[in-house]
Image (cartoon, rainbow, N blue to C red):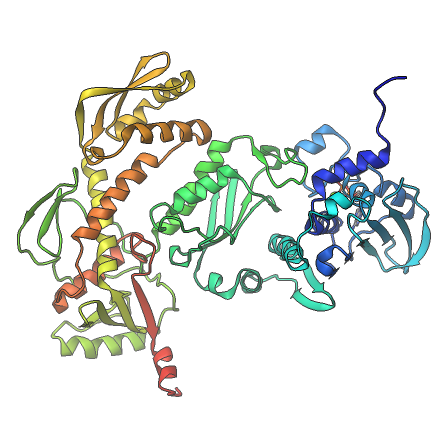
Length: 613
Ligand code: ADP
Ligand code: MG
């Protein structure tokens, strides 16, 4: 007798189920994706006992004609693609034609559907983890489909054992619903657990409604502290919201990335986002985001994983670059109002509040000369009207408030409201820590040290970029053993290394020689850094590690060189700090991602004093 036998279709389905049906949440994902593919505009999800007892999903999609019911439950049967060309530019969420067959092989599944525009007569088929002998029965059902999955894994006890508590399983399932709800604002979702409504999301059309849905799913705090992204560089488009660096998380639990409407987890994308936040997020913190990437479906392969959580981009480097630059730009603009151009760091020597001078090219602290910090520039020209946080005030309001202030301080009257700087004018200093200022909205509170630290840091970086990186030759060139591929990559990117002040030569087939390093990195482990950079270059085609490391050193210098708490500032010095904040990129948060300033509107103050207006 032959040793090799064809698997029974039941066993084959159960094996396939091993890939796609891990837990109740995976059932929900597959069934919901079918509803969305069927053009449903509303789906109702009922769950009992975390989904292991029951998952019932009803939609108002196109339905399944009764003659197709048996096929819908069969493996390798799909209405979504017919050829390899279809697969290469697939627009539906499903296409493998095995979800219902797999789920049916490990549960008690009932499929009820009606594809008729009019009439309420549908048909129903059931399978109980057995061979697919589908008995069709007439059943009342409006146009659309209901899939009922009971007793998941009842016939595969080994898998049932892997299920966690009801609560954990439900959390996973809810997460699936959230993701899909974020991917389709045009579909209404309700989710009930053990008879209780957990989510009820109406169709969202206007931008405000979409934002409300995001706030419901991701929490209102996210939406309040998020910036909208809209970046269009054909063939790519990126939209959505990213949390301000001051809204970072201890876990990577608020990160949603959709590629052509499909939620995915991807290392390349994670790396691009992380790199964009590099300079504004404290170590170990995670950014929050809901982002949608759209590109030609032919440019992305979705058939790389059975659950389709991963994709492969035809041009991964271009995608990486696009995402990084879109987000980097958006995050750099996080500052109070935006100033037109102007290079704040033309000089090579930067003098800090404590009278310390820092050579911006080498980072050396030069001297201690008692110089005051900055120059008073309270009358600097207009900032573009893009405020931060609250809406812009009316012109009369602004002029009135500011003129009374100006007269008091012997400043020229404000003619037009455009001349009001976003952070207003300093009033006083509190406990040597906070600057109090008045702007058009009301009170501004600034954490002096945090703000100054960011300004100093950005200046150090700008000065470095301006004057170039100073490097020094190593007395003894350092030879390191690497792979042939790494030698190649190092040669390919020699221009990058040169720009960063590193001289790296080929030392042999499998070795590199470091001859020169940037002065700021003299105390760093350059060999390790180089190895990490080569690994990045091989995997992502780009690396910012060297810059990141140099920035970290500059950041430490900035921290030491910034106004300490308890230092008295004069009013002009405070105003100068405010003006510098307005002109400095990323000045909305300090180098550690904490906020540098907050606004308390007059209305908020009024509320504090129970003052009706
Ligand atoms: P796939 O989604 O990969 O095609 P499935 O096993 O998930 O495979 O579904 C098989 C087929 O059953 C689908 O191609 C579709 O024609 C039909 N189907 C499943 N669910 C629905 C639904 N909710 N509404 C309409 N048709 C459905
Ligand atoms: Mg499917």
